[in-house]
Image 1 (spheres, protein in one colour):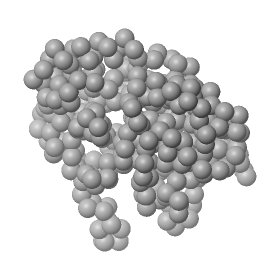
Image 2 (tube, protein in one colour):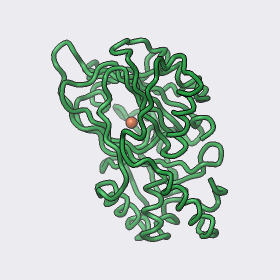
Image 3 (cartoon, rainbow, N blue to C red):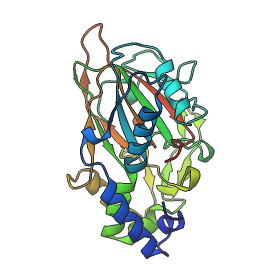
Image 4 (cartoon, rainbow, N blue to C red):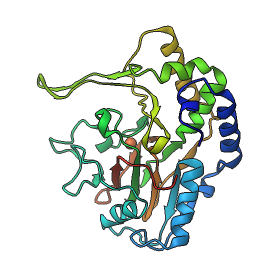
Amino acid sequence: MPALDALLTLDHPDDYARWRDRKLAQAPQRLEDLIVEVRDPRRLSEAERDAILDRCRRANMAVYATALGDDPDKAIPRRLGEQLGLGRLDRNPGADEDAVTALSVRSDAFHRGYIPYTDRPLAWHTDGYYNAPERQISAFILHCVRPASAGGVNGLIDPEMLYIRLRERDPAHIRALTNPAAMRIPPNLVDGVEIRPARIGPVFRGGERGHLALRYSDRRRNIEWQEDAATQAAVAAIREFLDDPLTPRFEARLASGEGLVCNNVLHNRSRFEDEIGQARLLYRARYYRRIGAT
Ligand SMILES: [Fe+2]
């Protein structure tokens, strides 16, 4: 990683170019390149941990596969996070008591209307884009207990790959997207009461441990972009690249006992169908820290 300066400003083009070339040369190409067989995520061997960290270093993500099947133990993501140096869990309002969120279709009053808890598709986003600046999400783990009977595929894009595409197209996009006022999420009002204030921040920022971090949501409603031409052009370019097959992306349909660990990469989810009594169930754990040694 070059000094973060080479990515947040346009002042060090040679450092950027060196970083870019190295990144592209090392990048995993296929989903299989991201997969690490793990006997038990609660107790990684040194080789398993090294293999996960290697994928995360090169692609900011790894997929682990186990033979644990539909074991519903929430310690699986929690203990895995501890071994990857992720520290304290984010406790978002939808999370269960232990701060690991069970994602499945829910219709109770608290969850109703929040798309993550439905079977509807989820647009490209990074997690926690509406969080306060001091609670930005740097990493998350998704562990699949039970897949849907059909659909529920996650698309995955390494934010650094999106960055490279944008900068190669037009460095001005980077200038616009590092603007601290680039993206505003209006306050969340329920029955006229503000339960979350507005959040204003950049798309690309200096993240934890001197790394580039991304904050983005492709939702068209409830996102207010700066109205100047440069920001509008940069956002149009993001949307174009997210849909462009030339942007390196992975598609993963996690099976029982499989999971994703990542430095909050861009992800989406396709619509899915549940069989009665066999609801899709994923656990999600979110962290303020990045995966150790990446
Ligand atoms: Fe998400």
